[in-house]
Amino acid sequence: MSALGIDFGYYSVKIVQLEKNASGYTLINAGNRRIIDEMDVFDPEIIDKSHWVAAILDLCKEMKINPKRIKNVVSSISGNFVSIKQITTLEMSNQELISSLEFEAKKHIPLDGSSAVMDYHIIGSDAKELDKINVLLVATTKKLLNQHHEIIQNVGFKTGVFDTDPVSALNVYLALNGLTSDGVDVILNLGNNSSTLIVWGSNQRIFTRELQTAGHHFTKAIMEAHSISYSEAETMKFEKGVDAVNTNSIDSESSTSFGLEIAEKTIFASFGDEIRKTLRYYLKSSANTHFNRFFLTGGSAVLPGLQAMLSEYLNMTVEILNPCEKIDHKLNIENPTQYTVAVGAAIRGLEKKV
Image (cartoon, rainbow, N blue to C red):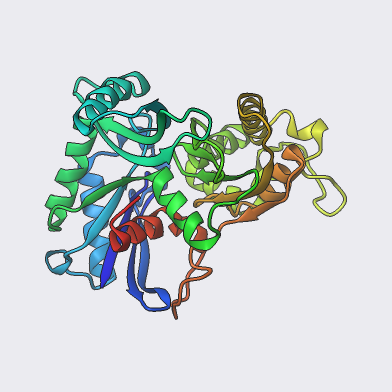
């Protein structure tokens, strides 16, 4: 049994093909393709269906995948019009629960002129209130769902399953580590147009927050700091990482690249502050818990100095989440952490559950 997972990124499309066997999963194919080749005109705001269709078709050709022959495909949806919330509600009939959750879904996503679409998963009885249950509510808009459906069909795939980036990342996290029994773990999925912070432990509520700072914004800040082109800034970002926004001439061997006297003026420092404030809010709203591990994933997770900077800001050990760590494969994969969402989507296809 195999499944194809597709990550509709704003910088690049990622596709992985997984097989399930008695010992676990095997990665049999993986690839990525930029959405726009000419980086100096790149802007995530102009990405539309035609860009994604063209990129996926090119990538399928490169990976020797015939969409018409793929029976099990799962693609992931992200952005401001996607919401994931853990809701505590009274036990009720299935129809009453659906009506209640439909009303709840409308409160958590900005509507785009179309109706809300939601799915849910009953986590179980609430530990504190015996007559209530905890439900994981996932909501998006009909317009966004239809857009993804049209992309899948235009590529040539049969109608597949749609997942969300946070759920896909959680599926990878669960496959690699399982839920921590004491305290919570943190995942930061660092995308191109936005980043998602996820907090979860076996005895704690699932918490997610969409952060409007990501790889594209890092590149724009570098571009503006040095008055260079977008493509030059993109190259500098991956070469110098958190130091790239510094206009000072800094000896990398003798300086603390993310010292507070420099870092507090940069977009990376503001990003670190936003994460720190969010985690402090979580601690205040979740009694008697603590953070165990912090996982960094996504295409920009490997920027030089970012892992160390976040570790210093948060006073936590920050680890790179490698989705292929416990998956058999013989592929030479560059920057495997960029495939986390695609791998999680494929796992969903193989397990047929959240």
